[in-house]
Length: 128
Image (cartoon, rainbow, N blue to C red; front, side, top):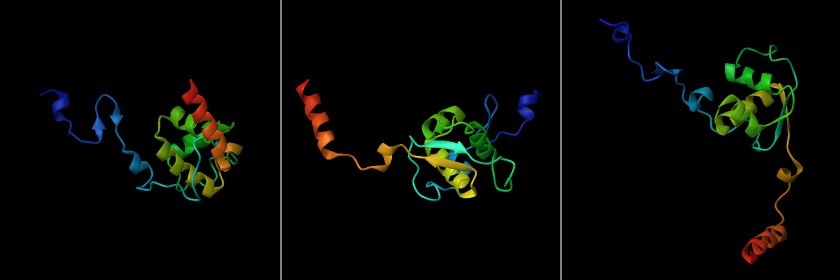
């Protein structure tokens, strides 16, 4: 009998790609970050060594801290780590609560949109 047929078949294991983990497993079922919303264009910067509170941190948390020693936008961080933006936001909320990262939102993200500017853009597009 071939060795492959001796292995148990699991839904969570892909023989070519390795273990397959659903995003909600990484976030323990959470869909919103702790401490408020996180803008996709916000910059993330690691503030402390990832070795400090390693009790509850998952490998993805460590990867985020390692990638954020220099400022990096949330959306680029998600792309770099090949994780969905929703998962990254939840994990960033954990790291922010633990004091391992700082978040810097771009000024435009913290201000409401100027309706007059948006109308001018729409009118300009219509004129084309």
